[in-house]
Image (cartoon, rainbow over all chains, first blue to last red):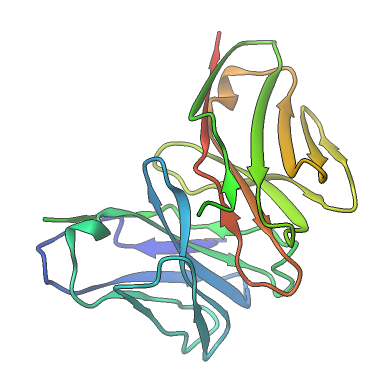
Length: 114
Length: 112
């Protein structure tokens, strides 16, 4: 049982480059989300999805795009990377009753933007 | 504007003693609270939760207390063990919402 899988684990980008962080879950969870973790800031919600075809913004959505074409996958796109996007990114999923359901996190993707 | 606040960046405790981690929140619409534990180079994992209709929830060595009037919750770990050394995040959500909001985390060091 793989759970939530994130790729790549590490990535270095130059300012202005684009890339996609991949997230896949095999638990048939309806709810998926992306967080970023920064020192002193904790985990901040970027975007989330409550099912295929449905996405919405979190606390810090600027500079990021998402789509949800399948239940399993929820990629996060950086269209034009900036140094402020240097962070550790976590994908998480939960059952449909996400309100009281625990979030299952991937191992994280460490992104450095030069 | 942080809706969930963990004001202690770190806490050091002797093995066998009690660890108390604190969390405050400002959004009165939050009605479900969770604690997550995170080791380096790993994703956070769920530890324990509590609904706003309760004031205490216990699971083995871990107990969470909720004081709604003070908008305050705490996580007690008794007895503390070296393996408990990690970052602990407090999180909150509200009925009908789709966002779980996290605090900044508290790094716990349990000394042997």
